[in-house]
Image (cartoon, rainbow over the protein chains, first blue to last red):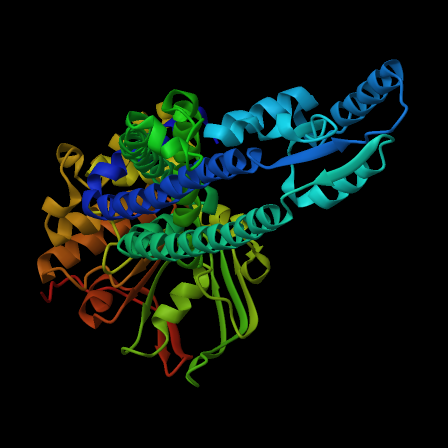
Length: 308
Length: 229
């Protein structure tokens, strides 16, 4: 096709948006609502995932160092270093901290009040507090395998892990994933049905124009191009509007959590994605999906009118 | 130019629209196809422009077997003929110029060709001064002439005209057929479908009568010189 005819068709596509303003506006509105729903849901999912990770990060295991009678200080130090290296070498553990018997006793004393704080000094045989390591589990789903690996380290006497908490988190995440997938699937399906019906109505109103084009010898590509451009253009406009509204809503909600930090941090509402970080990817995604839905919806809806 | 061999068209509704039609139209002829409503005239036209394919038999136009055309080849074929519909089928939002230019753009003509050809065909149908008017602002007769200009834009060898006088008063009808005769004299084959016998008798020429899907009359008749409007 000659350049002059391509530019003519592209221009026709863009000007058709204004010429068929009512139907274009209907398509724009439906695309906007659909994109906005999906966009806000995706933002919610991304942040909910971060909150879940924050909660998971509080999941700690305690590793007790074996206390062997007659062990020299040098042997004991080597054993502790061996355990530290093994724990730090485990990819599912982070933030490995060593807590000596003295530190443990001090912590315990600090947590007590009054005469109870001196109880440890009264225990016959000296400080009974265990020497431990603490570490955070990165992937709670693999907590049992991790604990089993820790038990295999020479010099480890016992491992305490919050299995109930880990299981609850795994279940919450599974349920959350199912709900999120279901919501997204319903949103996408409903959006596609509503969008295709709206665009079909718009194309139906112009079926006469399409049949005239066919009768004078236009190829399907020639007829589709302006409709494709029109669909893309409406989709991009809807994407931009959806992006603007998503940013506004997101920023408003984000400020709710960041204005009262301490209360929400307790529930894992920290490290939420700042708007600056997602502003442009969100714009690109909204415009790309809008253009794709607009263009695909228009050209697919046209097919039945091209059989002349 | 047009060749139909043992053509039958059977619609799914059970109607036999054409029954064993054999027809040959030579280059440069002017042919009237007449018949009552429902006789099969429009089906014949649809066959010639490849809107329909026959249930059996073969249709050749400009040497092409229309039954074998698929996809974009149909579009290419339609660019080689001109069709004028009773209801004009113009794009109402476009100007007169844009409607005619559209047929040239479809055929991938250059901007220069479009700029030269559109005024030429608009002057042929005496619509040069109305080039910038929106089609919806024109009278029925003027719209019909725009449709003829559009059909002539790509300089077709065959012009098929379906009931062109159906929406015109008698005087305009005679003028329009006079214009088609002029176009024919310039070498374009014209097939005009009509049910107006007065017009046919006035202009004369080759007359094909269709009745109940069959050709019942195919003769040359002489024209009269009186106006029966």
